[in-house]
Length: 521
Image (cartoon, rainbow, N blue to C red; front, side, top):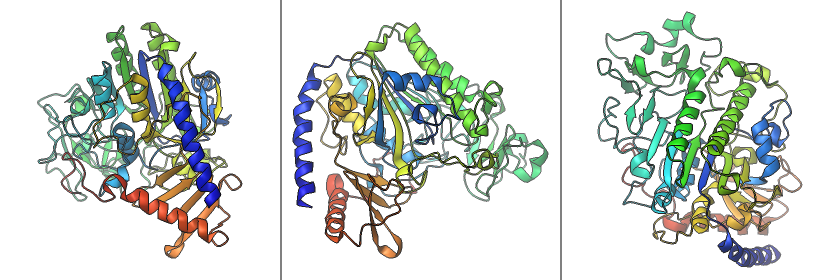
């Protein structure tokens, strides 16, 4: 144990020394975070899955720095997105989990805490949130009014522009929201949304609000639910979570979601050409329901799940091409590619993914995936691309998405971070730029409940059955099968103490959310 502590201290001192080199890095004109959804470590050709060709991601990997031990903060989406944009572990807040489609905004707005986009605004960047949001909208004092200006929204968080999905593709409302207003909404056909389990709109059971049982013949073969959560409303031949009526002219076409999101990103890049830009691009792919555009059907060897991964790769190519056409040179552009949480093959739909992906481990060589505490839950594909600054190669540095905030702050020379903001973020710029092989020496890993595991270098402490603890050495046991806890009780005790100490830092755990939190939490 003493040896481990000495090694950790040495790593910290080395990182401090190397960080001085980052003072000479140029300030990028464009900073892009490309955030995939439910993408596993082994889901693309860039990370070794030959059955899913992703040429744009392969190019990014060949030209950039590929990380092999990079993590989201949680193994589900909402907490990971919260942590990335705030620099604070989402698990510190009571009830933090997967939000319903009508949740109120959980991010701190301007004047409460400094978010990543608000910091980029203050540094002179034009900012945009494009794609999946799933962080809540509105105040939540009353049900969200989808038929007027929705506020607070991404604008109040620090985004100059936004074109978003309120939540996920499998949750209503199934509409796009641009700068706080539903796109293409007919005022004569107002939207109503409700997540009460037994709720039905009286006398309004129409095509956009019929249950799965009433529209069985209209369901797409891959749009049929596999559970009672996803069978509430059928829209465009796919069963969804939650109840929605109205808004027929505003409903999205699932096969065109990627194209619509891409168009919004291209528009933002073109309209702001010549200015420094920060783009938070959140692909809907490869989250369920999977309904790729016909031009991508059959482009992989893993069925519909592989096809939407190819579609996600195309979105990456579209964004990169738009940057080049708008005059953002590659050497002026920092692009970070990653995903929000680990993979899941079947998640609420009978879409054939289980059969098509038979024999495919999307988290390989690790075990677990979305919703779990195992490595596959948070270990993400993560590539940093910045030609001329970041040298191509691979890095085994332990890094986390929560560190993006302070790392970018250091890069752009922003030092006015309030004491109550970005509480858990660390400056990992040396590791992100390949100037150091060392990243963090410890990292808490979170699932969708209140459970936490702890990475300490190559060791991992994880809750076991019957209130026990398990210890794994990931350097020799990546699938977490050989429990070392009985053989190393001293190390287990030390890591338990360290995990409890991390929980108590920066306000502890189960503290209140910012004032924009849902009333029900």
